Image (cartoon, rainbow, N blue to C red; front, top):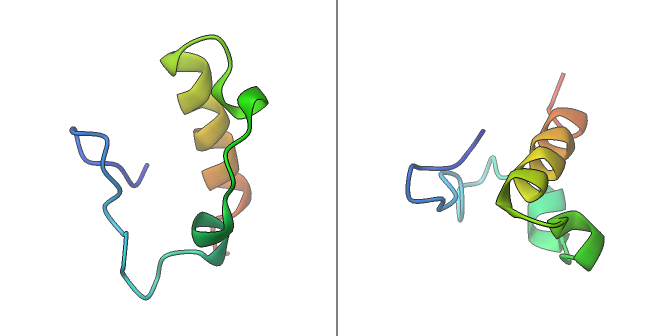
Length: 52
């Protein structure tokens, strides 16, 4: 995961930051009912968009 312990993005402003990050428009279904569900959604998104 590209988050610091403070939950801030480690690659914000970095040239290797995926375009999906800049274009991400959070939706209610991404957040789920709590932080754990939101982090699961983000983890799955990160895995799906990881460069090969």
